Length: 363
Image 1: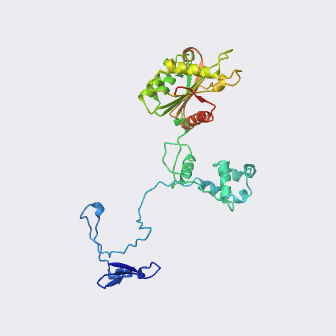
Image 2: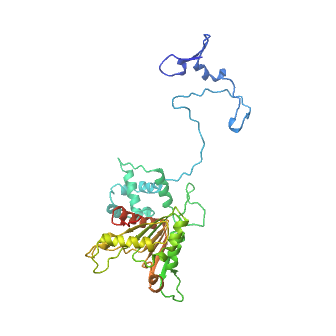
Image 3: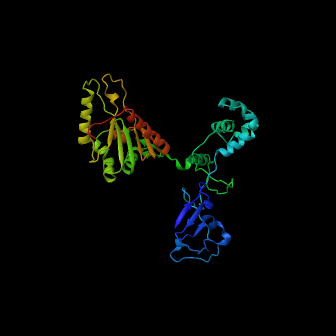
């Protein structure tokens, strides 16, 4: 069998199936359904198993396969979120006679002195309104990724929960109020005062250090008896090998000490790794070299904070010492907020990447 192409258009009429016996037929004949040139559909359904078929009297159709192959339609269900911009765009369109002269926030503030304009734009932030104005003006275009549009639609949903009656039949979403899920606890050290409830500083430290799964950042100005202060963390690192721990520690230069910075760092590192760190798995440890300047005016690493799994942040005035845990009056905040935790970690990483903090020898 041979397939002869007798033209350059690629049309079926120019394709001829030819047999060595001399007989031939044009491919165009396969499109004439009334003649049933390809026979009748057998109703085969191989995706259900062998010999699966259903009665069918429809004529078989020619399926043309080109260089791009054939595409079969599929019916898919998807979650479609409306563009948050639709509502603000509608409001801007209704007020276009007033808003077409607006190019910046100060001009928008003047236009919003009209009561009906202010009322209509009340649900939207000024930045949203300005972007909608720019989109509507000639020569402007704003393409945003689909994920960004969906995220903006969800973030823009009003607070509320407990009721499922949709206001908009096309899209109904409510945002859980921050007060419900974003918890902030006061953490105190010092004398116990009857009638006052607060978390205990030592216990919060131990809970965070002993429960981290993915990452833990700890910054402190002073620690005493490192083998005891870091005992829970050292054990946790042994239990969870994938846990990544970063310590930010201050190396002090005593008043009047003229020892070189290199010698002070070396002495601190030797002592920390030999008696100050209790585990066999070592964390990454950084220090602020400015604290070792001879003139004493460089600054020190004084931040006291813990970030666990980039989800929970503990910011406190307490160092890792018995005095801070048991005798001093210290105050801290324990916040479960991924955005805040990520911001703190990002700041620490920037200090490291910018070489403001140096890696302690011995790692």
